[in-house]
Image (cartoon, rainbow, N blue to C red; front, side, top):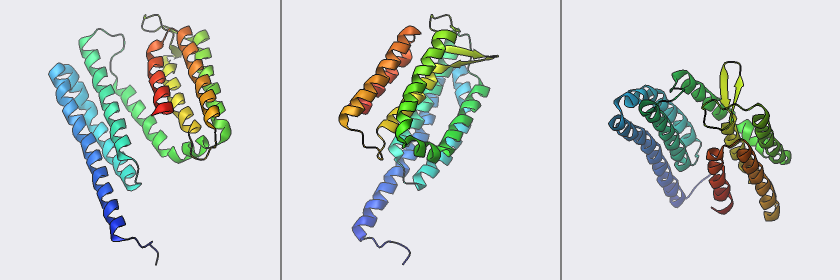
Length: 240
């Protein structure tokens, strides 16, 4: 009496979907191992560094994957997210091993980023609720503009490449364009929230303003690399 009765067809469809979801989680784990083999093939030193990150990465995939699986989340999206994270780590360790860089891969930074990711996952419900408010979309638009204004006046060129995408807070340097990417994800999540009733015209206007803000800001600080990511994110959110 406490559970809704379902037909045999509905149960069969649910079981099939759950099985496919489990395969996606297993696929993301196998992908990290295969990627490790590629990293070792490119560079032994990079492979050793990747191996040190593999254990915590697998733990995060296992625990967070189980959580999202039990919550009936989109496991294809989860697999894509973990795959991109693994590729990012692999590219970073390969670059550090083969090229002369100013800053090397740091386990401290890695675990700091991991901790931030865990905190954001734990705060998911609160963030999701905040994104449903009407003013959140406009607030994130202002945040994006403020990030570029801060970089325009206080940005530093830490790598000597001519871009002022970094800001120094004591001994710590932060690349604020990464926060601009996070702001973009939250902005589009808020804009396309199921609880909002923006017309197509309003969506086009707000997204275009956000796009222009990021374009002008990127040009002023000479950082078009991050803008290309925001450009394709803009197109994918509007047309895919």
